[in-house]
Length: 368
Image 1 (spheres, helix red, strand yellow):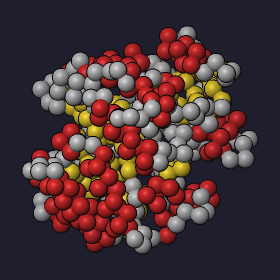
Image 2 (cartoon, rainbow, N blue to C red):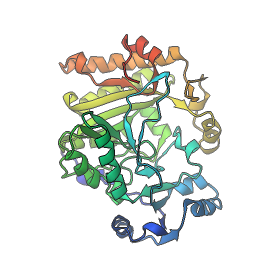
Image 3 (cartoon, helix red, strand yellow):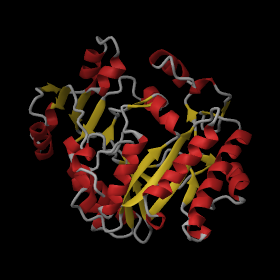
Image 4 (cartoon, rainbow, N blue to C red):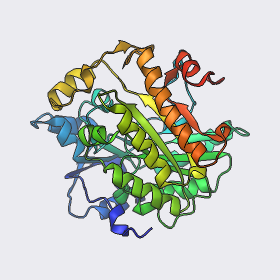
């Protein structure tokens, strides 16, 4: 591609490192400590001790994003997508949470209401994760299982340090009837080079309108950087996905979102696209006050919203249908321009009602 590899190496590193005493001697923990020789590992017994320290900071959320906590996951690694509300269609993806917290800082991020200190916690009990994966696939024998990372973190933002992808990609590549999605807003793909995904690993990028990306997606790679990384990942043999989430309504939105759709098809071979998803802005009502405090220049919380069946604030249905219909039209146009049949287009709505599906596509999915 003529792109220097250095363009895909992320330079950011945590400023403080905490290690749960009970995992200090695990081999993976030791690997991570060697990857951060400039930091003194501060031993703690629990996350609560770190919260006490963050309470003393002037901006606890920003300070938490600059910390890395290595710990044992006391809960399950895999769970069904949290979008399972009867009124909403859901693809029932299995979510793998290997990290909780994100060092990026999107103004609209729901983690601000979910993680009060924004602490980045990476779980190091990998043997438990892999045993759980085996049990999950055994329980679903004969069914295809789609696994996604990146719900409570960015899948790749710290991968230059934790190198989790170098452990996960081979594990999923050797299994059948399963796929792994690594979802990111970075260009931090260098650890993926040289692996053999065997068609079972999808690297996906959340993308947006150019002005939304610049204004609301702080500490993320630029759209240019994300698209360059997507082209390179495809050249390395990975399938590619894109997520427009959240789609935000603003004056002039049509031109900017249309251009981002075009850039997808200018960047990657359409036939290798695993999926494109569309999701409109939705947020916990508590997020508005947090955004007003942390990002006073951000305006997205001042639109017209109504409460949805999941308790989140959403645009009125008519506006969502308008946004999705336009996006679908632009994607359809590019797909057909590539000479591909519409029945093979992997386009879907994320966490959206059956009513909106019907109005946008003329049909709704049969599954929940």
